[in-house]
Length: 344
Image (tube, rainbow, N blue to C red):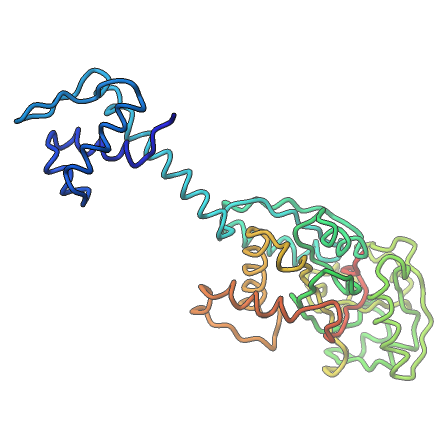
């Protein structure tokens, strides 16, 4: 039988004080109870640890061996218990994150870097998947969380807005629409030129939202299917006629030959979503990741309608639970568009 840590702690206190009365006072227990604990420890080990007289307490050889090694053993055990508590709070653990190619430029790297800096005990492994596969991977337990643009609703998958961006027109710098600088560019003007889109099967929700934008405005446009559904080089735009619709964040750091101008402010916005399993199946590590993800989104103005002060950071996980409970595949936030961040 392995002795309890409590018995070891009591013995070490007696050994340090060399006196049962003082040791009992330090441990806040009665002296008879302490004596019983020491006898129990000796019985479990099958050796004498102390030589007792009416005036003193001396360690046996076995007692000295325990005194030398005991503190390190207790410290190691304390580390085990603390690790268990931290894992239960989601501060330690492994998060399997699935993400789409379109979110791998700014959103996911920025988020993962921030989470690792805040909680180095969280190990995040990120796998690139096509957008339609991400929610399925979360639902089926092959991923703990997902990040994608315009994922279609999937039963048993919670979808929470993580980033909202203004739509804009990506074009060659010499394109006729560049004359609208600094913007906005009317949708009717965009419709006069071929619009580059990825195949619908690469991201059905995104494709339908994009084409629906023109349909609802009553301005049909010619679609040009990209030869490669996700091509950050934007070769399809080199004809100086074809355009694409992308998010504002993708307009940063463009090649010199490209230009980005916003659509009108009332146009739909591009929305990136955090995808999670039902709350009952969300691991503590995934819940912590989600809380930190939404906090990172708010302090970086990824969700411009949300104002979160720094003093709310300690409550981020509670706020996240509320938002995740409300977030479902049927929420009404607009879906994102196309371009170099169009999800696959």
